[in-house]
Image (tube, rainbow, N blue to C red; front, side):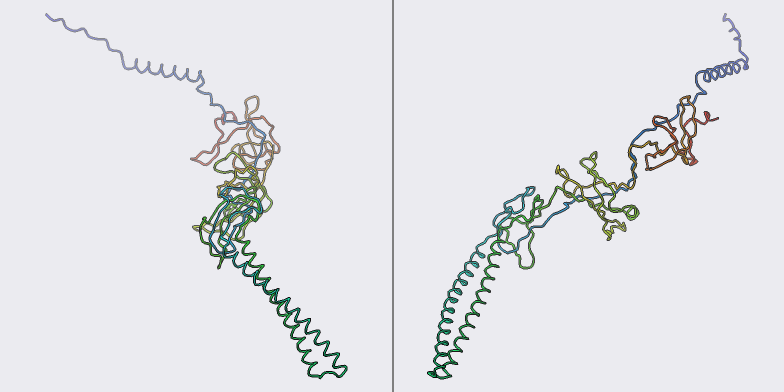
Length: 383
């Protein structure tokens, strides 16, 4: 026969509730005893010494400060090019040669013509001496009434004609000599020399190409002085009013962002460039390039120094509130300090007085919901 199950003893509901409250109170007591009421450490930073610069930024392009396009002054076939791109040349170095055959022939023909005219000049001088003798004879005979007046006049006319023929031939010789000088110059232009010291940065013509210099001089190559580079920076119309000639400026390149190359603003071109309704003004300055690392058409990130303070006390901009900062004392308390601020940029503010180097200031963050500033975890410490 099966035995009937025993009745289990049930705990009242209030016992469970009581147990839960005990656990909750114990947990809260443990939380507060173990730092639950402690606040996280303040977000502080030391007052340091350094440089502050207020900058106007722009983008620029490098170009040679001085260059010349070497052209051909005479027409003909480009026979030889003696240089290559990147080669350094000195003033007077031979760069290229144009076929001189036609110009040599013209010089030879003009010289022959000049030689013929000079021979005719000797003949005209002899004719002049003969005419002078005949005129003198007729003059003496006329004084002695041994000849007629007509003979004397004929001798006089012959003398004048001989003088005129001699003067005309001398003028022709001068004209031919001038033509010869021009032909010799054209022959010299067939050999093209470097007009300046520099680097061959481009060659536009090809060996064997026929050049036509009738309308304008064809460009063969460009020689540039790369020892000094010019930066053409494009400044927005909103910032161009902040610039003035003589202010310091530096730039970096994409290939070497750590290297700062300094210069001085020369001038601002008054005519802007308008692209897609954006107005940009060109500001130009030179930079030393003795090491040759700066090359034409490099992109430069340019910074014009509007104002600067060197080796000064500085604090982060985010720590300054209406001319005051919050300083963490050695006792761990936070106190307000009035400061005298100097040069400021987007990162740092110069502190002329109010804090000392090494002291810690509290950084202030902005509440994105209310727009108000709040110091990170220190409100309770100010009470």
